[in-house]
Length: 175
Image (cartoon, rainbow, N blue to C red; front, side, top):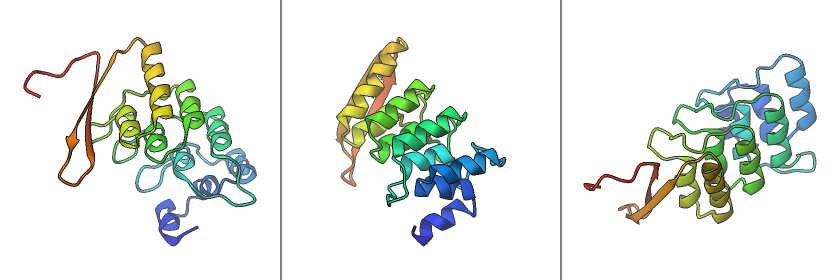
């Protein structure tokens, strides 16, 4: 584990256990009274950390298994960190995969929530060019009766794609 991530966890044992993919330790901490939705100084919860982590070693469990365990123990998938991102958005940004995104959606993650920049999980999936995850998100919106209109604009001056999403409301003509 690098020092930067250790500093971001601020001594939170649950976040460290999740980051390392240690299911047994995570279970012991939760059974011992750790609060599953506690966050670090950036507002990231254990569920977000499970979606973000890329740590893998011989003792780590798979990302989807950790996410499922946390959700089964009442981790809230719609908590937003200090930048407004949810676990679902983090999963889309970090390429957590369709299995993780499906678990989050099945457990109540709202694909229409937006972060402070106005981007939803759909926009993050488009920007990450993850077609599998995008399809899961579109299916979830459709199942909830939400029509999705996505407009991909030209690249920004920095070279990043600029994407806008509209749920049930087409863009105004001046856009």
